[in-house]
Amino acid sequence: GAVVSQHPSRVICKSGTSVKIECRSLDFQATTMFWYRQFPKQSLMLMATSNEGSKATYEQGVEKDKFLINHASLTLSTLTVTSAHPEDSSFYICSAQDRGYRNQPQHFGDGTRLSIL
Amino acid sequence: AQSVAQPEDQVNVAEGNPLTVKCTYSVSGNPYLFWYVQYPNRGLQFLLKYITGDNLVKGSYGFEAEFNKSQTSFHLKKPSALVSDSALYFCAVRDRNNAGNMLTFGGGTRLMVNP
Image 1 (cartoon, each protein chain N blue to C red):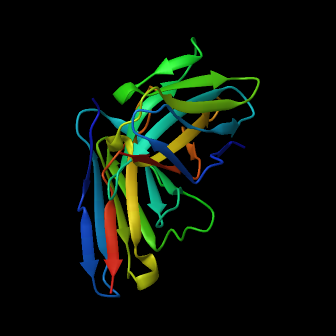
Image 2 (cartoon, each protein chain N blue to C red):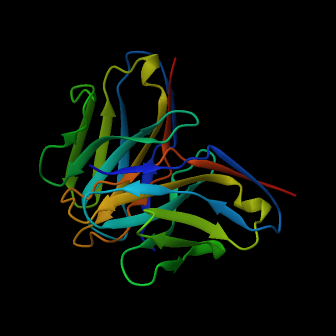
Image 3 (tube, rainbow over the protein chains, first blue to last red):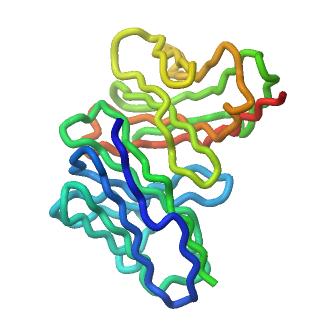
């Protein structure tokens, strides 16, 4: 089945550090990738939709200068949390959609737990 | 606009008993419906989907779900629960007319299967 690899799985760093998270579709091409944030015991909150070769579309309330998204190829999207602070600590999950198959499920990475000290 | 409701934060069931996790949805057009399961510190794993055709869909690990258009529901079911089914379950919907492929998730239901 379709596999999405997300790296790193866990990051612990000091306040003010920028952190990059990678999301790769390993065996399919993903025109669209999605970035979610999940707080403890809560559902997934869509942060942005990443389209290959174009600017990401951010959801209301998500700072695009804080959460930089790059989708340079059909198999890779990156999320960079710039100058991270403790309130950015969360579980970040990416997903990818196989292009051309809108009725197919999104495939999710295993998530990245970000802890800012 | 599209939305999903999972009315139960937690469902408790004894091992071997049937389980149901409820989901209702709202879309302006016709829905694509999905169930996902999440284990601790992991991403979401796809369980099953309804696209068209038979209202009863079967998925991974013995799970099934029934699409009910009149009640706008898509409840997840399993005839005999296992302790290993204990996890967080999410229902999701996408409007077929949603060009952006965006999924909307319910709030999640924690399933606890007791030995």
